[in-house]
Length: 65
Image (cartoon, rainbow, N blue to C red; front, side):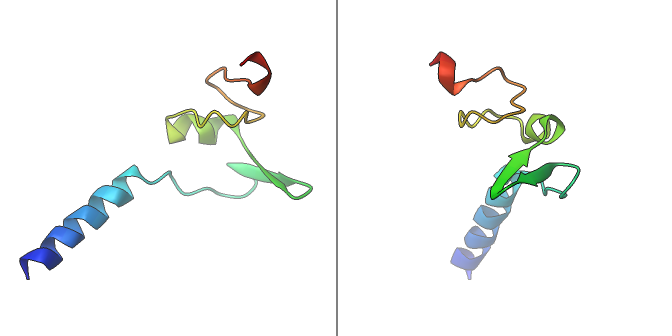
């Protein structure tokens, strides 16, 4: 039983690290087959993924690396 409680605590900790839910049209949109995240969503996410996002609020650019 203790193991189960530890698993639940680990699940809750992992959920806290998950990115916020995204709403189509507000947080992202599709451009052809690509999903493009908006700047407000990326700011809420709180970290730069260094993927070269079009609306990156953190100043990362694949071309400058």
